Length: 278
Ligand SMILES: [Zn+2]
Ligand SMILES: [Zn+2]
Image (cartoon, rainbow, N blue to C red; front, side):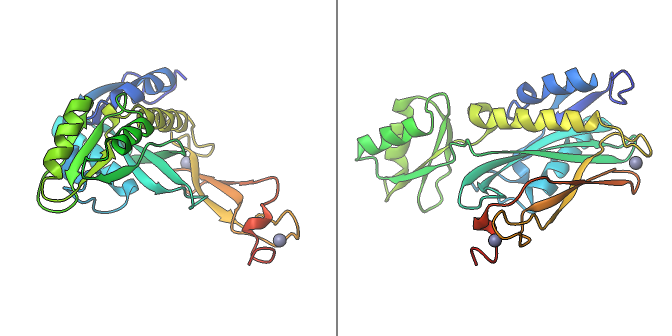
């Protein structure tokens, strides 16, 4: 632990949304790394509410965000986080929140991205003209309002979204304004500082990043040894036919070609089998 190459380092964290609350503790505890907030306009790289489309994947964006903070602060070590809401990677019929956290270290040329997946998300929306008050209240309950804020925007037209709403009167006023020419969309505000459910997943991703940065490559001792890929082919539990589920996890070094292969024990559900469930 005292050999941590991050001990005493103060990394910049590019965020406008309070992500230091989720990331500071695990990085300090495991690595002795401090955080300084770089107040960069991360919305320039895309917003959940769609005013700015996100170019590229979340994995690319999170590294770009970290670099943005490094450019603004001049810090050689940068961190950032980025979330993606969509189908669960292993169970596409379930909605999930995937949170990516990146560490870019220009002292050693290291870039590590870790992620955490959670099925617990309040990602949801309701189209309403505001007249069905009960539907609005039921929706607010469902997304954990007022601990979680909401966003209101017109279904169509140029109106900008009103974000961070946490008072019922404000929500109802915003819905009335946004639905003046038709209907409004009421949605969970997914920004981390007003969405504690998401903040918890970011904290889990931060713990994985800290653990990974604390893991040295067995061959060259570079930090950041960890998962780099997987191979499918886990046998079906009924007939033994190889399925698409991971049979082998591959860990690798970010600096040297060293790889280690770890077989997954167990069998796959026949539901995932091309022969039992074609
Ligand atoms: Zn190595
Ligand atoms: Zn089978």
